[in-house]
Image 1 (tube, one colour):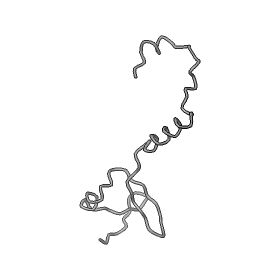
Image 2 (spheres, helix red, strand yellow; image 1 turned 180 degrees about the vertical axis):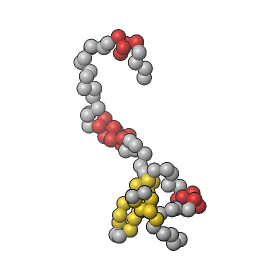
Image 3 (tube, one colour; image 1 turned 120 degrees about the vertical axis):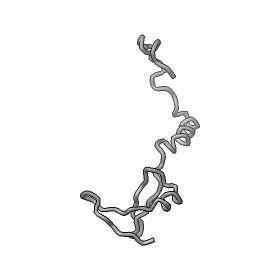
Image 4 (spheres, helix red, strand yellow; image 1 turned 30 degrees about the vertical axis):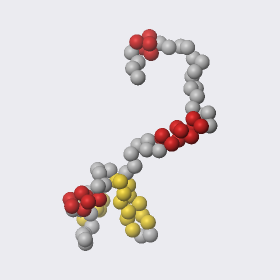
Length: 84
């Protein structure tokens, strides 16, 4: 599909037809990259996507210990208001 680059405020952009967006399932947030003189649009990675694997690796290496484990200075707020 051929389209034109248009002015959008002080920038430029393209209009992506609804059918193309539906077929690509990009969502509402995307990543833009330039690869070999081409603009590549891909879905944005969800925040903290790779955390599960990193936490597993920390546990395997014993790096997941509490850093404030020895502290016994809980405030009234900690005791009464904090909810997990």
